[in-house]
Length: 311
Ligand SMILES: [Fe+2]
Ligand SMILES: [Fe+2]
Image 1 (cartoon, protein in one colour):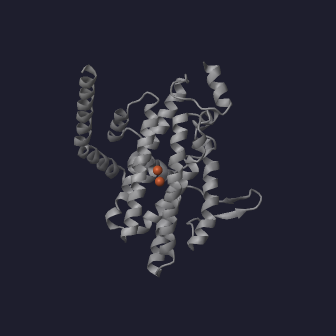
Image 2 (spheres, rainbow, N blue to C red):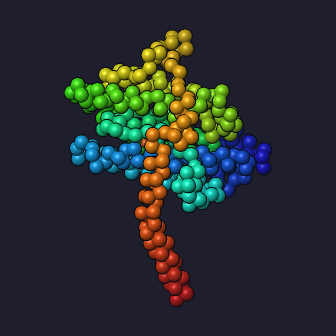
Image 3 (cartoon, rainbow, N blue to C red):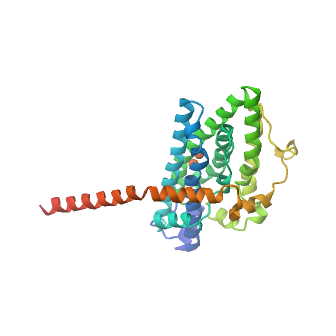
């Protein structure tokens, strides 16, 4: 069974839910997919914060569509995780109990409208860099979910870019607001790729299993290379004095990341960690009646079908 699994992965074919798989592979996927799902769901909050305050009806409808997309991403991903034999309710309980990880980026606040632009451009942009290679992940349900997610992410990134572009070409005060938001989100978005390769012990195994296709540092470099020409179009700057083109490497060199900040946020000491979980708990409680109604409806429907079959 192990040999067949290895051959399937080596041949770039997909592992499907009914196939045998090593327990460690299954566990790694459950961890990664559930963390990814939680990130989508918690990630609705920083932007949801601006739905009622978006500057126009058009901006409001775009932002609502974007935040709804993130909810959808969470749902596909919980479904993909369930194909590995876990229960969505258990995953949700782990999140609500504060035991599950999600992307640290969503523990930062969104004080201005420009933050919505910066999130779309940088955070969704970094998510695309991470997720496009996942469309070729060896586990079928995860890879297929990523295809649709990535299409939507590219819309998210463009809407963020467009918000920033508009502000950067507006009044002096608007331009300043855009620049400050980019300054706030740039470094945390670089941290989204995870620790440097040397400190990322699980990466090698994930790459061998073809869940992961590129290392954290490779993806981070790709992201920096993508941001530099785009920030020029925006007419803004990235908050890194060490950023410079390196003709020998064919890439941009960039400054040191402050990993102590990353670990502080990861440990729960970020600006909004407690608020995010408290809000999620309340939203879950508020949704109790919907879940109960759905279960009651399913039971009634099943009873009716049973009656019809008996008749
Ligand atoms: Fe998403
Ligand atoms: Fe997104």
